[in-house]
Image (cartoon, rainbow, N blue to C red):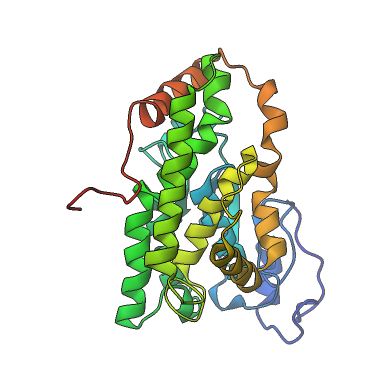
Length: 311
């Protein structure tokens, strides 16, 4: 790494910033200078939360083919949270390496490392980032009932929108490739039906006549929902088709978050199908991954509502 040019006292991207000398001294300037493509930094200056030690920078371990990883990535970038992007390829089995296990014993992404502190689970990570970096209130509202709406959706979606969207995606992509056999027609029809039922419940229960899940502004709930509903598009299934309410909500989320940022986060997933043929399906890592996928999506069928009578 090289130090940023010595522009003097002021940061060239944020004139008057008194922290610029400190930023350049540690090889990065969070008012806009890029650390050799490793650190994703804010687009506009606010050095108040700048780490003073590059070794203590926030690190996010992500695979952007994963919906939860995309929600964390989008949230951090949208809120100008500087982080070091640590790519983890699930398809290559990098989540099983000893190095990654030191960060997350669960061997799953996303994972966060903030100095000596590590944590897993996307919803927990999103809430941690919202609290630490004091992001705008609408993301995770202080108002008790609005926050309850966000938490309600985040609790429900794991076994409904997330499970059924992922199941359909895997049925149309990785599972037949790894098994060498097509998915049985009845299983595929079941996956489509369950996802459609969950989407209907999402519209009727969680959206109703509101612009967003928690009310008039976008929240963590909307962000988590949009990345999940975008996933089936990567295998040619459009969950928004013939659903005007859902399409209108999608447009509002895109406007609030930024369509360019959403497209950036989803680009890898949307173009992934062409790269699947290059995978070594007989590699131990992929075979281990395949066993987990089969166990999750072929052996289990979860209710489209999330639970039958009690939760």
